Image (cartoon, rainbow, N blue to C red; front, side):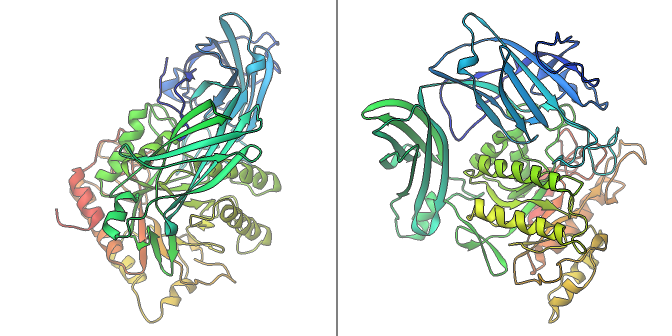
Length: 586
């Protein structure tokens, strides 16, 4: 059994059953099977939740495969009035049968789905779960992030991920249960918005009690009647009225204060369900040219994080590995990460919430533009926002990166309309966080202007972004990749400017020359550290920037431009990295 921690950290129940472990498996490149009753020949065994391309799965098969099948036989540990089956993520299109009954279908490789399987369960000890995953490796019309469409990883793209790559689990539920929970901090009024949706058999006189606690001290206890399936209320917290005392309850990377929550669902006076959760009081906003955290200007020190591991690819080898990545980012002096082209596992966001690390969440790109690719992207992005809305660590949404999937923004109105539509959709789904419409260049609708610039000469970087009387000339000049910073009709309106990609210094003394990739290269550790210090000094001291994001956190396959090796060991002493990141003497 491959045991991870509770997969849905913001809505927890005591009873749950992991189905991770060794499953039957087969590839079906010839499309021989359509249904579990087709006498499937199980040729392999695979360790779920690791994808078949990974060594951790026991297969390590990185050839092109379009369809694969999984089978798990299990005994139900606990049966409730209802039983819910959950998948953290299956790439890309999934069909799920339990005991021969089709119980779920889902499209989208990075977001969760669930199915009420109560009526598909059979009496007796053994249940049979079968999953068909379809993922065309050549399809550029689906969100795929950094997954390569060539057989072997090239340039900045990595091995593919097919099929199940996050936890599969079961949850016994009461007949009426808390289905979803959404937290919205209201910083200005010292309130916490709480939206509870109930599922199952909804009757009259349903209510939910919400308790908020800080370090075991009760802050609020309120009970609300459900209107239909829902209760949506704001909980007023006691405002001490003094900044220092008030700050004790505020969440930030420097002080990641979480509020524990207990929610109890009632029918009349009868308890029908109880869950645990957490939230935090914090605000993120834009004020003129500054990013604001909790009403104060906050300088962003981010690192680009691809979220890959050598042995397990997009799936962390363990929950401890996710926690360690958060700790390492903080130890290197960063206060946040830009999760690049990946919707990260909720357990990573849990550790970022608990340990205090800001997260920019970015939608994995499709690489072809079509109505089909945009429809798929919109659907999956909507699910990602819904999944991660309540995490206090998430501070910015990024639907597009470097015009990927919309390559003709300067020429084609349809491409511009797509970016503007996704920006406004995101703002509609979540009005509490800034949105970057297209990060890197060719900006139109955006709350932050993100610039990608891999010039390795610190003096040139300093001169390019120096504040002068003619700052506007910056936006009339060509930038890396021959791209303009803002599209016609969208001049810079004073939004914060963040250098969201720079650096990319490759250093790997053990790699054969020509087998690694980076934007520039250092030949030894001393040179590597000195170049990092020089670049970080410039970007820290450039008044124009509200923050920066260095490329990158760790080496990722052929990309050796990480501050850490792929195994997460630092290339130079970590205290020296931290001092350079923060631009302070060691």
